[in-house]
Amino acid sequence: MQAVTDKQEPITLKIKTVNSEKHVSFVANRIWGGIQTGGLFELNFILEHNQLPENLTVKIENGIEKELSRSQSKEIIRENQATAYLNIDTLLALHNWLNLKVQELQASNIIEVKE
Image (cartoon, rainbow, N blue to C red):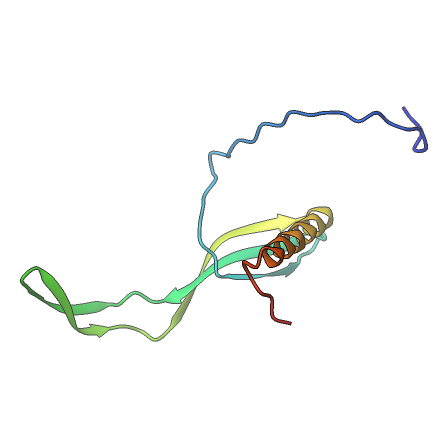
């Protein structure tokens, strides 16, 4: 084993990335979470949306549909799409990666972050 002060030669790794059979893609417009017992950080990826109408009344004339009325709750639905549990090293790596991506978007004038 090399001592920490010894100079190590760089290595090159070839890494292949594959998706798990359980992999899913989803839209999330909110995140909720926090520290859990055992030191893991919980991230819930949430899609917030209006409830679907219970009933619609439509009129179809010449192939064109026009909504006449609807029955719909005013409740907002928060649908948890997925939950991730991160250890502190992964949480900090995610934090650094997100900050870098925001800086790149700012430098490209794609986004403007309001302070």
